[in-house]
Image (cartoon, rainbow, N blue to C red; front, side):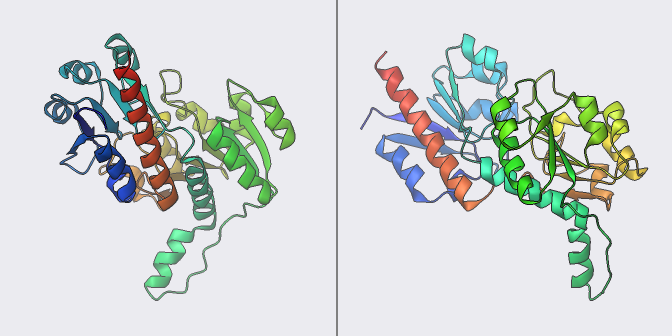
Length: 315
């Protein structure tokens, strides 16, 4: 058991993972500070909570330079999840704060939801569900997924998991990535294409790339204009990858057939016009929210945090 340390847990689902991760922290002699808001924290909300904190198990909170500088003891940020675009990594490095994520544990969960959105938007499952619940018997005409062309933007861990699922539907897979895994692509007969060509050829376009200055706004008016009128856009990665105003106009005007979205430029998307469209299936950033993924993310984030704190003790 180590000396007393303070740990702030900002993740909104960490405590749903069962008793084991929390018990591991307590066995390490950690004092736990909980997120009092039940949602990702803004800068001015984080700063007072970080006073005398040694480590954070972080969700999608805003860890900018001002926040990182506000704590005189912060040593480790253990991301409960994959993305680290909400953390100023350059500032963390200058301040000697370790940042660790859990890149593998939610891969299958996100891939599952991606395919759920593909099926939901193409077969109009939500519309039929609501209609049937209201006592109607409407026959919604959708489009088949089987045998269609799937364009994957970002063929990393999650993109590959989506590709494996697509093979069960005998889809033709095309991909765009700045780093190409030629061996995997050859195994699944995936063809790499330039981004514009992928957008023009795909029946379904699904985003699985990280958010950075190069990818922010990756899908805008020009890119949506390249897509087929019968094509669908799926985003379970980061909302800022897509220009939402342009997407709204494209969907409203029928320039593309539909969209399946789990992430948004602003979350929650309370004022987003996308919520008013029948051809947009929208979920609330739930891609990683499965029993299995939550438990694995909690255990991995605790392991990363405690390992880093132990390592720092010996320095």
